[in-house]
Length: 212
Image (cartoon, rainbow, N blue to C red; front, side):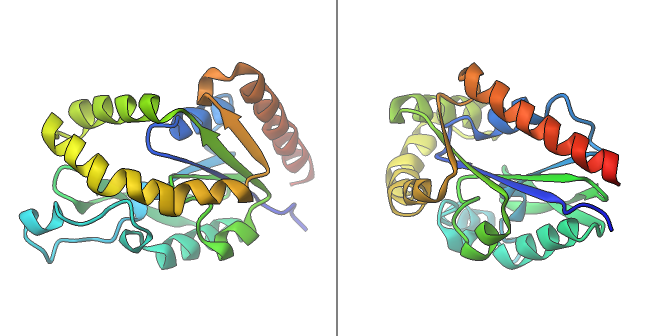
C-alpha cells in the first residue's frame, strides 16, 4: 500500500508572501513529487456577466471561490487521481481555456488567502501554515503586483483595497490564523522558518519515495 499523500495548506493576507513561501519550501522538489496549487485558480467563472459587472465582484469573499471544485480536485490528488486545475484570467475576470495537469505527486501544497478557511479542507491537511506580514508591506506588494501583472490602475487598486480587500481580510482571512500549526512572520524572508519547512518537506518526500 502506498504512503498517504501529504496536504500542506499555506494561508495569509494578500501580499503576505504566501506564494513566495510555497515556492521557497518546494523549490528543490520535482514537479513529479510536489503539486503546488493556487487557490486563485478556483474563482468562479464569470463569463456570463459583462466585464463591467465582473469587475464589481468581491473577489476576496469566500463566495467568489468554487470550493466544491477545489475540494473535489484536492481529494482526487490525495487519492492519486489526475486532475486538470483551471487557470484564471485576472484581466478579464474569467477562467481561461487552459488548465494545469497534476497526477501522482507525493505532496500537495494549497496556497491562498482562504486556504485555511474551509473546515473540510483543513481536516484533510497534515500541515497548516499562516504567513504574516505587516499591513503596510502587504498593500505595497499588492499595488506592485496588480500594476505589473494584472493590468490595473493605481486608483482602482486602492479603491478595491479599502472597499473589499481590507475588510474581507479582517473578517475571513485573519481569523484563520488560529487554525495554523505554524505562523511564519515576514514570509520567505524568514530564512530560519523556510529552512525548517524545506527540511520537513524533504524528509516527508524521501519517506514516500522510499516506500512507493
